[in-house]
Length: 360
Image 1 (tube, rainbow, N blue to C red):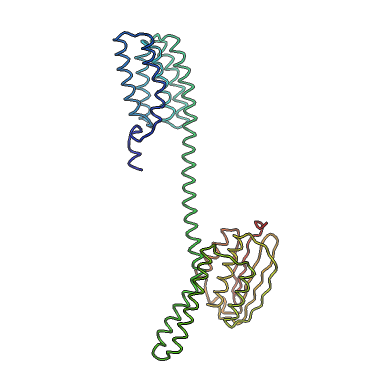
Image 2 (cartoon, helix red, strand yellow):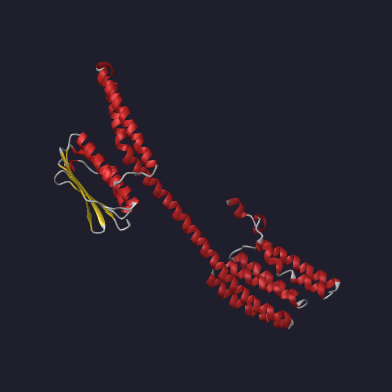
């Protein structure tokens, strides 16, 4: 694409340069209708060839290039128009190069200097009114119209660039979200698999029966992890919050903790429900892995236009810092208008808030 953009417009396969030549076709047609002499026809033919060279060489030019092509068009019009009034068409092409070659403010100022020059040239060179008036009037009209169109094209280009940037940032955010979700779904499980595999390897010679038991647990955990991964790929969350809380109670009870759970009937949009479910899962995982607690309290309740989930344990509290799991949880909640508060005064307490206004 970069090599293509460095080529002249005529070599890029664009049809627009040829479309705009329809106005220049009036010049040879006028010569034919006027039954011009061979000398006049050759002269106008040479001027027309010079016009075509300048036109295709400068098509799409900006700044000084556009100014140079405009000057050439002006000279060609001044040379050819006294002999053929239709040749004031060259002046109009010069106005279009001004419009497309500069920003709007510069182009307008240049046009309001260029059009009077065209009028003065037509007067000094005695171009008849049938050529002078269209040359002056349409240089202004076409110039102003092209400035507006050029500005619209530039605005569209900026909009496309902004949309491309938004899409790029959205892709980055999506990759980060998937990374966080995979950490929440698989991080704890893979850590357990690693630890149990290492333990089984150490026990293989001393206690084969226990080593086999550990390997069976590894197999069971791996199957569970595979199911969770499939659920994540299918939409990260298929069950409701009630099922997630039931699973959390089972996990905590299996880990030997006393569990007290209170849950109101809350309604969430699918996206918020998925975010809250993953937050509950990560919170429970952190309690099992790090808290060294004996009791856990879970509470889910509505709080105005938000849903509030609290999980509190009587573990070691502030002795454990925040890891990637909590950081990912904060970022995910913030992306959906939620928040996470953490207190470690007595054990650890997490307060997770998710807005409910989108659930209708």
